[in-house]
Amino acid sequence: MKATIQLCTYNRAHLLGRVLDACFEQTVSPAEYEVVLVNDGSTDDTPAVIAAAQARATCPFTVVSRPNGGLAKARNSGLARSTGERIILIDDDVLPLPNFVQEHLRGHERRPRAIVRGGAINVENFDDLPLPVWSLRNYSGNYFWTTNVSVPLATLRAVGGFNEDFAEYGWEDIDVGLRLRFAGVKAVFNPRALVYHYKPRPRAADVEKMLRQARAQARTAVQLAKLHPHWRTYLATGDNPVQRLLHGWTRVTGAARRLRLSLGSLSGDRPLTGRELRAARKLAAEAYFEELERARQAAS
Image (tube, rainbow, N blue to C red):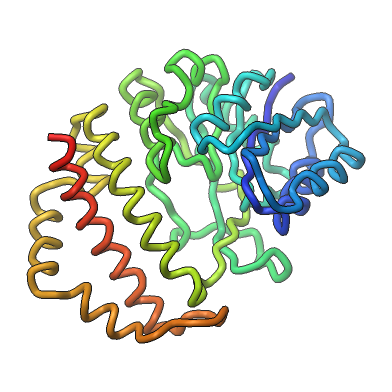
């Protein structure tokens, strides 16, 4: 088996069927790759979507069902069942193009021991897709971004897989990337290994979730810095004197309160306006740095 597409899912039944179909509809021979899906305790219609996908799978398709325990644990459950020489990691909100596996394998033919990073085109839905042409507008500088990345399975296992201490949102893939980087594993970028990444416009009901995720990501950022006290970590997480000072000053000036006021009373399921979206993102950044300070003090 040349490759494994491995993904985890949690309560994304509305997307999962399309994502799995795209995984099955690859240009390489079905004998050359497999799909390993981990259902991380979904409570929606995910089991029914998986059952329907099992009936139409065109390549080996393994399903792991487990209680909800977070992405790191789910990823490791998938790694344990993977058999491909290369593991290609995606998320349950990305739609691979038909040549996706072929392009990842082509990247590994050129650099057999490397990480191969693919491109992602952000879209608001899967029904009106732009031309599959990647541009710098969608560039991500992450060394190991599990939206679209592959690596020799043995290499990922050799560095210990995913750290299950990352139980909250954020940074578990960056931790793996740092360990791979420090182990001397190089990364190459193949913009032809493309996916469409589902990024819908946030709605009024999403703002509080954005703030909760920002605070959780701040707590895991402190975990990451403790594991990897390195300038790359401090730059990536914002846990550095310059950014902490800047956001500390905005807290003193009451920026968060003004942003809350600018958002007004959000209700219903309508999309955020441009002004509201900018304010919500700034408010999430303030929530992140406020929680970062709390988490740093708790860890000291």
